[in-house]
Length: 220
Image 1 (cartoon, one colour):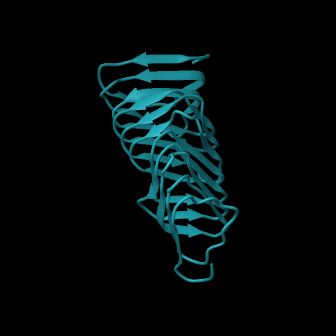
Image 2 (cartoon, one colour):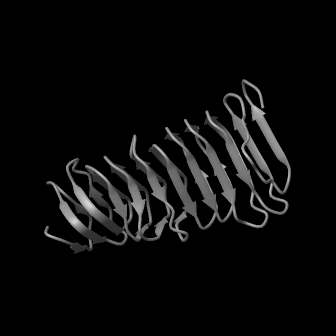
Image 3 (cartoon, one colour):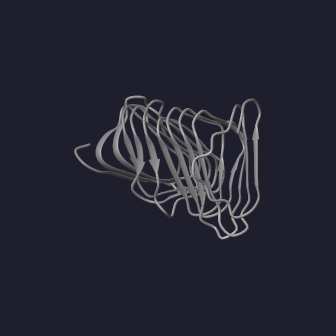
C-alpha cells in the first residue's frame, strides 16, 4: 500500500501475508476480532476498532486512536508510541523488548491490567490503572487519574515513578522488583503501599496519606 489503508468489516479481520502501510492503517471491525500477526508487517500508524485485537510490526509502530472491547496485544520490533486515545476494555499486552514504549495520551483508558515489556516505559491512564506482570529494563513512569495497583510482578531495571492525580487516589504496589529508585506521588489523604523484592531506595516523593514500605530483603 502506497500510503493509507482503510478496512471496514462486519466479521473478523486477519492477514495471511505481509502488510506494509507507511501511512495509517485504519481497521474497523466493531465486536469482531482483528488479528494482524504476520511477523514482517510494517505499519506507520495503526488505528484499530474490534473485540480481541492483536497486531505485530517488524519495527516501530504508532498506535492511533483505538477502541478495543476485548484484549489488546501489540508486538513490535521497535519503539511503541501513541498518537490518539487507547480505549481498551480487556487486558493490554505490549511487547517491545529493548525498545521504548511511550503510551502517554492524557485520555487513554485501560480498564483492565497492562502488561509491558520494553526499555524505558511511559504510561498514562485517565482513570485507575492496574499494572500486570511487566519487565522493564530501564525506567518506568506511570501517571494515572485514579488508583495505581499491580496484579503481577513489575520488574524494573531502572527507576520507578508512580503518580496518581486523583485527590485521594492511592498507590498499592505489592509485587515490585525494582532495582533503582522509587518516586511516589499522592494527594490529600491518598496512601501509598509498596513491597519490593530487595531493598528500597526512595527518590523525592510526596505522599498525602499513610506510607507503608516493605523491603523483602535489604534496607530502606
